[in-house]
Length: 323
Figure 1 (cartoon, rainbow, N blue to C red):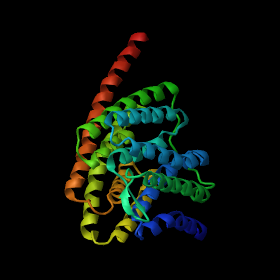
Figure 2 (figure 1 turned 90 degrees about the vertical axis):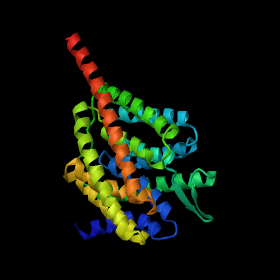
Figure 3 (figure 1 turned 45 degrees about the vertical axis):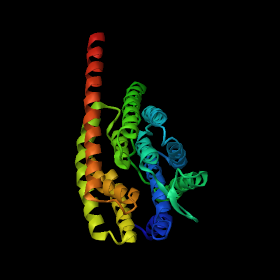
């Protein structure tokens, strides 16, 4: 890598690192959450990358606003799932695969934001909500701008566009699964980690059934291994939040490399502990919390595959009948 690109990489992560090493580390987490969908957006183009961060910020703000209303939250996530599915016509569903989980975190996970008066929940005031959205949007825009310069001239293998019919089935499946899962998570499960049900669904459900099966096996295996890795890192570095943030950043970089160069399970192995370390704030990364996340991941995967298998069977039989 040339000195110029090294400088751009350092510039790209500088705002997040500076916040993570300051009393405003929770704002660094929000910047990180905005960077992820924008980073995937760069695989599609500069325009989608520029939109990804602000769109994620708006969705997260709506999610926080609906955090006390399970039915409204479920309907919103179902609508978002449908939008992600339909966006596959343009090949933008990879971006949606990050927008959805970030929104679920805002809706269920209770994100924190650091204000001059102290660290508070994003739902405590309009100022806190606006600050959360602002940091997320900044992370996305910064990534799109600096990352756009960094990746200029590079061939990046982004998600491929799919036919409208496949995208429509994808949208319906994702809407139903995410809507029901959101209602269950908000109404029946008393755990801030239950947003991992939604994360799993947005990641494993794909436009084609065969791709869903492949993604499911990789996701469950990678998540289990990644959760163990996060627990080990937190155990040995629990008193060093700055180092935890640095490790999370390195893991994210490794995940970006794996996304382009290695099988999906390797990407999951690196990204899972990075997300856990960032969204947990370095305080609740315990074996019990890791076990919860692993169970939510496995449960969502089993239900999704079962439901989609039934749907795939029905569609296949109809197709044979009409031919």
